[in-house]
Image (cartoon, rainbow, N blue to C red; front, side):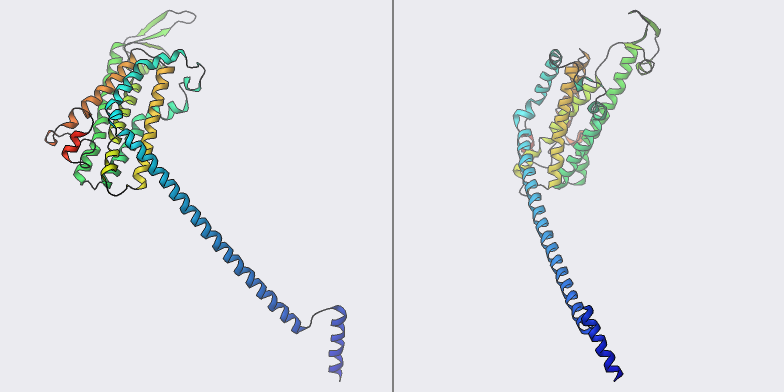
Length: 332
């Protein structure tokens, strides 16, 4: 009797306090667990749908970028491989060298490119050959792999870059010796335009480091390197158009991307050349540098590289991509 009375009292207390009984609490917990599991399942399904949509969007963007890359590289390859560009690019470069300094009459004197400490000059102009060597060498390597060249022919193609690098080193050493032998170091007197001769045996580098004035014959090595690099890039990239025209399978994105970067590099060198001629005209030092760059290109790509392999010459650009008759039909 006491037990029943206690249960009745507990029931009355629960009703008054609106406290659920044990069975009701179990039902509530089950309902909450089922609702939590349902919401978790909904969240997972939503995340999976979002991930699938993002994947589809990413694939669409990749296809769009790849189509744009193919269109742009095909257009540039056709342009660089044409007879008009490959056969007359050196003439356009010569006209730019001759009449570029005339632009100094119109360019603003306080332009950002009139500062010799400009970021482009410091980061690119002093390392012109390094950038050209990396990008052109990568293009030759990927093109040779795409064309399935044998290893010996691949090394011959890459040796063209090595030969140009050695030529630039020899020119730098000879021109430095010429400048040191033909020049003289002066120290300006304070408050006067008269210059005092100090050291006849002083080199140009040590003279400039001492904040003195150097007077002598000079050949612009910056113009020499930029002109030779421009001519080299046009020669190396001009074979990509005929290669695309005759190959059955489209080259991969890495080859097209490195080709596009080479075109951007060529445009940058042309822009820097124009800035040097317009903002820092030096006659005849710049014209002599451009003439030496042209002679280097003429002697290598139009001379030695066209000899037979028995003369120990590197291969011409495109050798192995075309037949022998096709190579001779390429524009000179």
